[in-house]
Image (tube, rainbow, N blue to C red; front, side, top):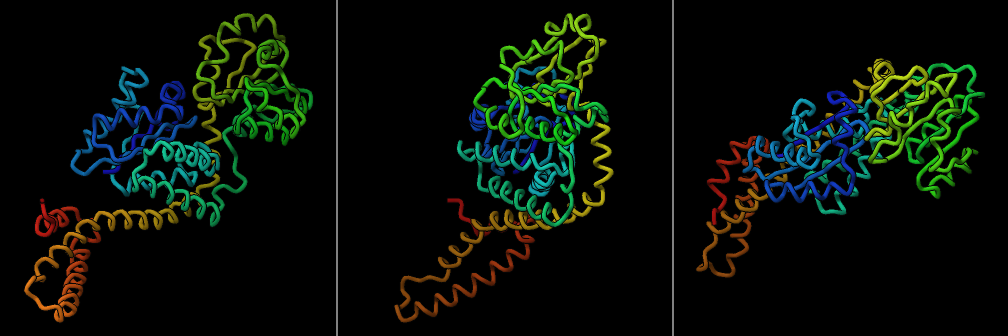
Length: 407
């Protein structure tokens, strides 16, 4: 059985998503915990700012309800969450439903910003971690590879990601049309992919006075040279709270970088507003109070831009969904044939045992082999037809009872 639990931006606010963000070094812990208590054959985990998803395969004898319960309880226990996770997750089971979701995800159809490409890199990175730790079953591995194949085809043969926007650019657009961008100062906290996208967007908007800071300074050097930015030491960036106009946070820090303690005197110290943009999960900014001179923009504030982007791309979304169907059919066909393989091998073996006779003379062996091949091929074709290429599991169970040895 293949299943999926998805905790994503559609049903879980950022305050919940950040609690269940999984770092790559936690993937193996979840896998080891699950195989110790359930019949897990493989696990694939992807965790981003907008989702945490766990794909799993179990042996057919384990009930789906038990499998889902094990995965949900393992995740809740790891994150010490006792308030009930089920309202914030979607469950899917079955080859068709789970593969469809992953193919849509890789193609950008499940993203907050439809068509964005960053999810492809995130799937590849997650795949590498799971592959290295030997967490993937053959079926899950094939499904991931097929999802990337579907993504490449759809992005090539549609305009799903043409002229699209990223989460970072949507956040910057949320700032509005800034007429005096050349005069405003911006600090970017972080030097990862999201920060680079933000900087590109800022430059396209004619912002000139851009600073950057990062905990690991060596990671900033290439960005400084490429974009001609100004470096701020990480241990002193908070001093700019009184002077800079906009701060954009996009780090992988496990703890908040800015809290109410840092902003307690902000209204007295500033004459104009500062805009704080948080593109991180877990959040880099956690403030509970409201401030006259502080505007906060986080991932959940982007709903209007998300809806606008979706409406603009509805025709391309419909086109992409049609393309995905053929990849789903290919994958489910492969899975069904894989399920049939042990049955076919057992059938051929049983037939050979039935028609073989130790008393047969050597010169008759060739004729017997021909009879065996013809009979086997005819019966296998009939089995494939009756079981609907392995899709009819009830028929397959009856066939296995007749032909497959229990020894």
